[in-house]
Length: 159
Figure (cartoon, rainbow, N blue to C red):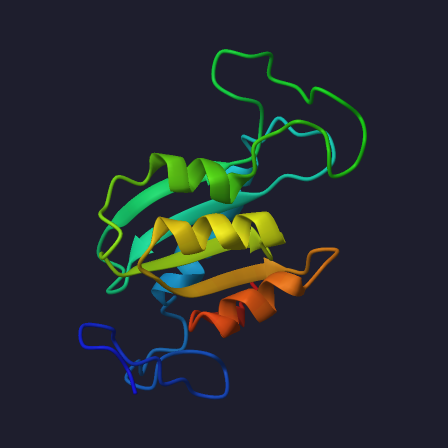
């Protein structure tokens, strides 16, 4: 059963909402995912550029954005060269830090890459996350289990 205030997500086979009769009209998840890809271009991580947009469930407000990179005030580069341990903050982590909405505010998260397990847990602690869209796979898909186990919808959105 869908929670009150969360719009249904009926889709046609092409992925667009049922009520949309113009096939060239982008729907909000596409628009915000493209924005996440633009944010990823600001990443200072040498290995992987990731961007995140946190939106209201009606897509009328962007609640926070983030991209991966070093902490504010530090050099705009990785601390180390070890994959998965470069020292950069993750985009989802930065977006969660930037989000000032209360925990009970319903949220949609759009991220260029499937979140890692730690970021999945950070999004759980952010509170209010109802759905996570991602465009690219990550080296582990364990976060999908975490999202589903906690009632968060997760969907790959290829653009």
